[in-house]
Image 1 (cartoon, rainbow, N blue to C red):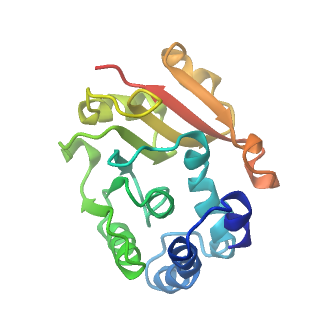
Image 2: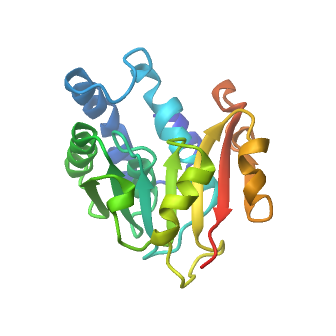
Length: 208
């Protein structure tokens, strides 16, 4: 939890309480439904919450922005981002029902009013959003193909509407088809912990 306050010092008391509550909630839910590797649950704040918040270091969504989190699992990156951006609407989607249940219950437990969830494949979701976010659920080209239909034409943020992914490792080949539309940011520029040495935020403009 100290990590979150270190990198996001301007949090309100409500936001601090919401972040604080995540640990016990995920420990409890993870004992029933395995959404985070059991050996990794103790690293919740660094490996999952702070990792998710790399997107908040890359972009400050303006109020009323609508964001879809594809393959949210237990709620990452959507729930940490919804805490940071209380005036932004997040729609969390996953094809595994029990994982969506965890995300839904965690969001409800900490009083998030800006989160909706849906158990479905992203191909089935027809709503439109300013941005799609995701944590490495599939290759970039596949993800762009299936979320293109969900990107709004109207722009309201500093960055044009598109896809923002959290990925790791060598991405040169994967972004090749999008080289004129993609931007890669090293997360080691945001966070000093060793875990982030090879982690990246990948942004792809999806023109309409």
